[in-house]
Amino acid sequence: MRLENTKCISIVSMSLNDTHTLRLMAKKATVKKPPLDFGGETLGERLTRLRKQRGFTQVELAEKVGITQVLISAYETDRCYFSVEMAVRFALVLDISLDELLHPKAKKFSNKKPSRRVLRRLEQIEKLPARQQNYLLRTIDGFLRGAGVTA
Image (cartoon, rainbow, N blue to C red; front, side, top):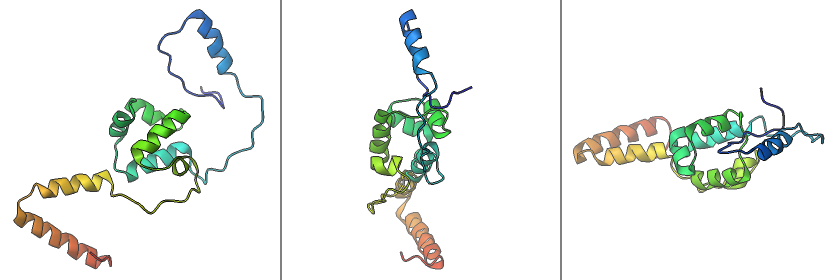
């Protein structure tokens, strides 16, 4: 069971004195804070959306940030809340501003980069023989014309 307004923490080693401090940290907040409007999207849901938009798996993002996939999952499902340091790390790896990560109504910058998923496909296409690349590109061009997107 998780208390409201508490954070997940990792404990590597702990002495008896630290146990008392830990209990104090886990107490429920006594100050009533006004609710925050995250635009119908939790921080975890936003992290998930941004990770997928950039084409990262949980494992890939965890490796880039320097944590485990289990912790990424906990952040994305709002079982744990990430620290300011982790927010900075996520923003750097995902190539976004902290505003875009933390604020639901942040202005999106137009310097959108292709997702890693698309880039991986392009790398695979480049390994094909030239003739197969041309067939594939013509197929993609036909699909884009049919969808009303200019190639």
